[in-house]
Length: 563
Image (tube, rainbow, N blue to C red):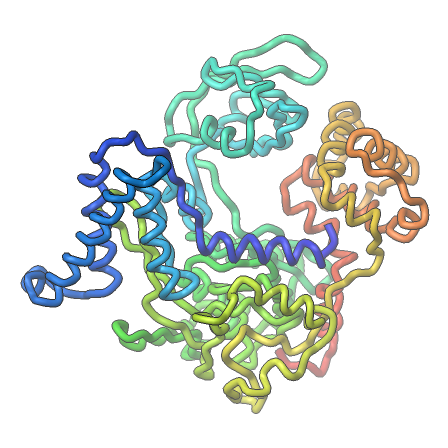
């Protein structure tokens, strides 16, 4: 998928996920919901608007708040009992909570109990499951990868297997979706599961009985040497283990000769602040300010670098774009403000609000903004929000006004200015502006390529191709070896074009195909690499086409540059 459209789609994901929709099961028509929902509402209102003890709860102000909550309950009861159509009372309560939070800021959010576990998985960095990657193809659950050491691998499952039943329930041909797969395969660590599997080329069903395990979700999604001295480390989020993963990646790359590093934070929507701070600490010398936070009810808290850090003397370039947000902006801001790195790419998202997760009595969760974070020079990079501002439209405005194609020097004309120790001017109030701007790379783009990118053609073709020719790829033992030695031939490309025409109804446009040929081949190779190895292999394959990485290499190879 071209970077231009990927950036748009990823931005939509970040913004929507920060305002997570509620899951609204239908009501049963009774009033039993009042018993269960009232403690939740009372607790939520108390947390949102007051920091008071039990001794103050009988104050006049508290009684007024209780009356307001009772009024909400009364209105919803009246609606449920008298409205022209049937209504879901719990859904009305949830919408009132979400409406209240929306008046505060775009990132405070309420997460219902049934969604808490899933929403925390990426942050926690692990989940209970079987350890496979999959696609749903022709209404069948297909295994694309089996994670080494995971329960599924230990049980004997292989790439290309078809899972036709889970715990005796037939799942083939029932319109299964991704959520349905997760509901059946995920579960408590150590819980039993039975998978009924058909192997490629066989009509026999084999049963696999085993226990679910603890499956890691890695946030360092690639660590490779791209020259004799320059390594690149891609971080997709800041989970509970990101700092440990990063430290391990640095250690391994240093063994391979890394003396300079590219830190790729593009499409990183954030996560835990403490692991982001620890990653920034890897680059900063002891005593350097990394970040500070402050709010009306939260005293100023400063965090400084320690004496630990493998990269303190290592030149570094940081890659960012409009989907670099929150915790990843803490890292890039800290390194920019301390004159420690060159920031390359496009203006970041602009999220400078800190949320604290608060568990409510029923197990649901409120993530409430409690403070703002500030970079070492004192700037807040939170972009504007509130009445009259369409927060979600910000990215489209960037796209429409051409900011993604060329540097816009007018963005920060009225923004507060700050100065780094070496005299560089930086700006607050709307994301972090890179030191070196790199426009979106649209080279090789065409109408045909766009249609292919927005279809399932790559995914489906590569799965089917490997299903027939997997033995041809057994000689490639690592993703690096595959990347160095395998090339997509013209014949393979034509086979793909014919497949897309027959199965995806995408008619070939020969002029477009010739113009986009290199992109099409690269995307095919990346998809094959993803199925043969880890997802990070896709990143490795795309490096030669990655303009930001090439610019970063150029900067790091300049001998006079001090980073």
